Length: 510
Image (cartoon, rainbow, N blue to C red):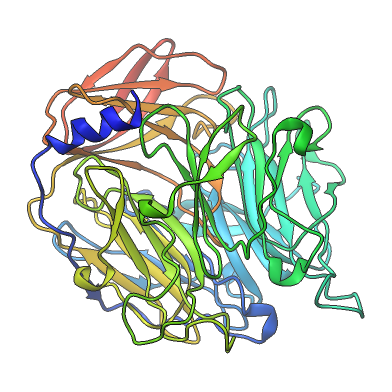
């Protein structure tokens, strides 16, 4: 469906209540440290004790990380600190959850100032270093991560983005380190492939951008350190990774890239990409064959380039980006954490987080202040996730040199919703790279790719949330990683389901 027709269809949907959030007390956690921790401060969100509610793992920088066990119920959010010893070593920049060995327990890729780690998850939120995988990283300053499953592999392909080379005496400017790609060799990893040149990434994401059956790696880089020679990057994951350029239709983009996220906002079957930055945030639409992206018009309302409250008119600094439908009206909204790097005089110091609400005509309007999430701390990692299973997306933010914040979504009279997770046998149990289609009424389908990566130094694993407005008749289809398309499955709204692969059919487990 063309975007203008989709907007017309949405305009007939009854208006729902505006978003409302309330702060929730949580055990204190602060991300802190010197210049090596000006960036980072990631937040990993995943269920590690099997109760269906996601825990929060907050990186600490020079402080230990904190694992907040989720003790919420449908009425209120509640967390308690319970950090296993394997996660307490200082130096954590961020973390990403994924089930590396497909055993049903969520594992962790830990980004560090120092050697990175792969930790194997076990019962009741226990973690230990993996043995026998052959993974080594060396002493790096790692600030970005993504993972995918390539065809025929029993382990995921891992990409680590490394920031400034701390060992270079000419640094920090113009001394970006190389990035590392780990492709499995059977049941272990061999030496990494260097992705050169590196331009100081702060986020990266594997996605099947062109719907070609192959996930390529988009990297968002920090212009502050690559200075003049760098740009945004896209690596095509062929038998040998290849950096795309003008001959492929790749359009050069230069920005202070902090975070990255993707979503098919206009339901045309192609994903938009959102890049946070210092100054303008960049929402881009695909204009060609998967390599060509162009900025949307300013009138879309997505640049979020200056603070909307706090009295500081200097440019904003965006970090983590998350998509999600906070009112369940069938239109995805955007949450962006904001905050000065440290004391950068050209950027705003009083810089509130953004909550951009999609309007029926496809534009976005700021709602952070009236929604109650306009914190003026230095935001870093974040999450827009349903933390208590009530069908409304909540918010959590790791702050630099200020306490972690959590807000519960208390928006009244929201629309219908579904929360969906995938499960298949064998390697890649969580079906990373698969697509979920949700059809509701006469509107074009909502399309969701299962990915690992993006955001800023952290991400969420588990249920995918779909807002459905007033729709009652829901049909689901899954396009699995090998291209197999499931038969449609009819379901009722307002529930969480795990969709299990059963030949060409889907089984749903509440």
